Image (cartoon, rainbow, N blue to C red; front, side, top):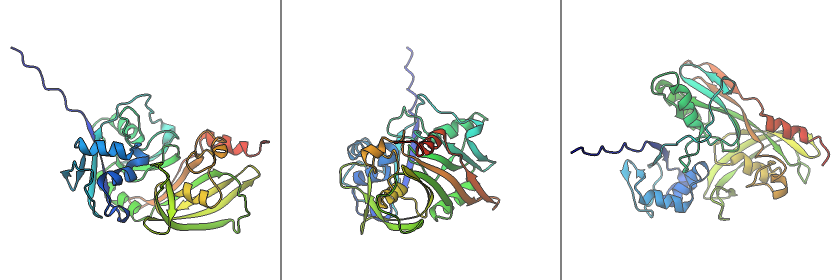
Length: 320
């Protein structure tokens, strides 16, 4: 009698996070929704399902109680089925901003998630990088330490080797990588006092029921700081340079909206009429300035402005 073969195990992708000060004392389901809500389209209800099915680990131990209380510094691991490509995006030579034996920097297109989402069918940049490296032979290594929102285009860097991974992670965690973004915003309703300014406040999840939305708060949030400079003024919109000094979720989008300059196409933080004026949120990660984690060389990685961004810039000069 022929015995049936055991089915192949489902490939698993693991996402890890250390609980920050804002997460201290939170329930496990609330923390997962706050930490991965935007990146994974993860609601609190979906977080509860993942916990109860045994996909969440705290300090290496599987936790199935949604009311489990977290402490700052604890390591949380979320294990999801590996992504299966559907309408996948592949990396072309034009998309590679920089590459050597230790690093690869990619010009991410708008609309592509940086990492796996709850929907395992959706392609993502991390998987595209792994596929790109795997095509050259061997098992790829891609260390991801910073992210871009799905609708944000621009440069993002990965470690290709373990010797580079620690140094890259330390630079990002220590805010020693200089990031420059450009955004197309609505013109301000009130005159700005200066062409350059800085916003420094605290951000937390919004109370309006939209799990991916952030809001400024006087206490209970995470420190967020961004410097801004006006590059171009037009009657129908402005081009703004943003230099984030911290890396909070939606930081630039919230700070610009609170400054009276909501980003065109931003469905979360701009009024509906402004959100409809662009095909997506007009935010682009233009440059990264860092020290090579292995050689020590100074690197400046730059991604060109994509066509939809330049098209929206041209539209600023058109009649309403």
